[in-house]
Length: 369
Image (cartoon, rainbow, N blue to C red; front, top):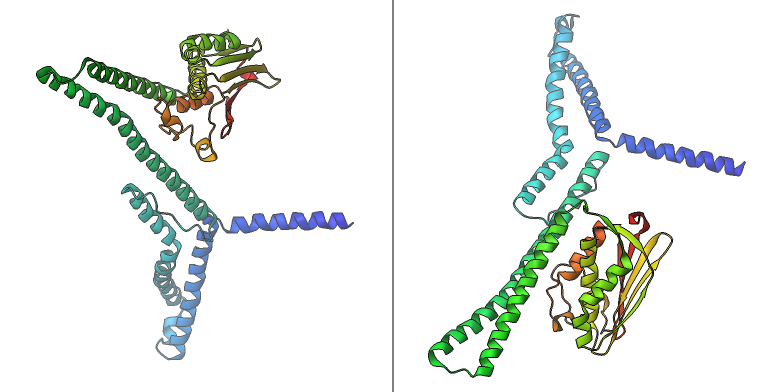
């Protein structure tokens, strides 16, 4: 019996909540406002007529069945209009504030926020939606400014370097003050910075292409393990020159996706693992078939990353202090993240200072054929 009463009480409370929410709706509030105006206008009109009659300002002849309704209607209309002006200002005040806030947004002030504490359900939701929109716009604006600053810095640095050393070589053509070794050094720097600009431009175009792409086309069936082996061979010059050992543990797995796009993801991840591993270190690549996904782990033995770096490694142009010791522009992992999103994959990172990093990609089995 006790449980039965508890259920009844819970059901009653739930019905009460629904009733309260329905009473807080904009339609209900407007209806109640109109009702209050009509009732107030009628009561005020009746009281005013009674007062004027008792004071002798209205003769009994004016209260005939013909004249009285006309006077009552006219008085109610006048009083109702005045009451509407008073009540509507308070009722529509949140909308006026919202219009002003939208004007601020239009002028570029994305920090403005609305007070969400209202007694009308729809208005509360409207204020919450506006604040959410303002949050997104502010975040987008901050990201845009950060992107422009980073983009400008990444392009300006090599251009200034190329311009400076090119002018030094121009002056040397006239005065012959540089040695052959200095000339080679300057031309090597110009070639290096030119390659850096070319890579940066290619990565920006590639990232823009993937970000604007919503549907993946040109899907083919291929062996994922063979694709990983080809990437390792493609990067052989980098890891063999530094004596880095590649340890492969690959299950035979067939997968269906855009092969070129997925190759770009492995190229960036394995390339980073090689780049940040010390000379003579080891990079482990593992591909395992699970029940619900295919799991690929890429582990290096580099310096590792702290928590602050881990939270931002997939941001465009972000480079930690450690990463700036090596060649890079902070776009590789942003490309990796976008490809993973298009593949419906989950990518996670585990890292510890002094113990290296592991990037884990889980490709859904649903993509498999």
